[in-house]
Amino acid sequence: MQQLLNGLFLGSIYALFAIGFTLVFGILDRLNLAHPAAFAASAFFGIWLSESFDMPIALVLVLVFAFGAILGLLIERIAFRPLKERPDAHFAGLISSIAVGGMLIALLQAVFGPNTRRFPVGTVPDDAIEFGAGVTASVLQIVIVAVSLGLMIGLTILVGRSSLGRSMRAVAENPGAARVLGVNVDRVTATTFAISTALGAVAGVLFALSVNSAQLGMGSAIELKGLAVIIVGGMGSLPGALVGGLLLGIAEVFAIQYVGSSWRDLIAFALLFLILLVRPQGLFGKRKVREV
Image (cartoon, rainbow, N blue to C red; front, side, top):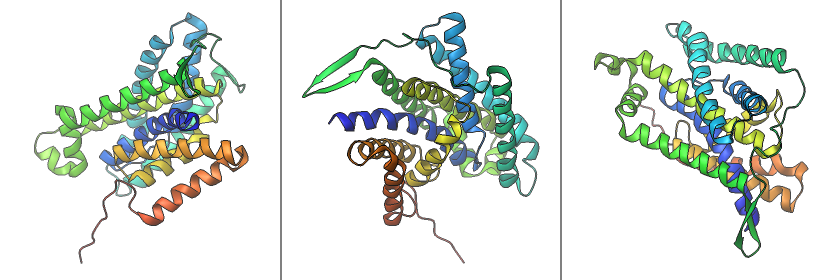
């Protein structure tokens, strides 16, 4: 039971990161490979806020969310918007986002240096809560799950019930028709990037807190897992990204506990591969029918 709980804590971070990935892909049909760099940059920014201003973690998360939104707007403006009229806009944007991500990591190294950074001691209390039957959860783990689930629920409500969400769904269905109906497609695109990167930014801080370190390559380490999660969950599916992230976290924790840490990635990805063998379209994906 304890390991299942630990897996849910880890999986909630993977899910939050993957939801940021899949939001842009599901609505705009674009793959933003600068997302991992924004993940790392936000962790470093959060640590700098904590060290420089002795801020409580709640305020740090709010400011990091805003920082991530601004980063998302810049990524969209620099890497994607100038290329949107090209016939190969999907591929060109992917390559351009890799370049922007590389520049962002280089900027991070210039500002903060190549060394590992950590949040100050006491950023989150070390207290633990006993649930009975030997199952415990630290305050940090509860914060991670509460923040992740809160943001996921908020995003679900935003996409499903707000006017912005209706515009997002219209753009996802048919951008040309949405523009004819009066939807400001460029504004929806920019907003989608802002929300997506803001979610990834918060995930970066939560991940740095959970492992007690932030490194320049931390985004690259989680990038492959994020892509695997959105494929297993179903490309473009927000519920799929949530379930896929939780499954990956649980699989990793059980692999470490019963097999060994060196087998963690092998067993986790083997499980995801088996899921794809059963459902090639992903857990929540829809099988496409090709008409001829």
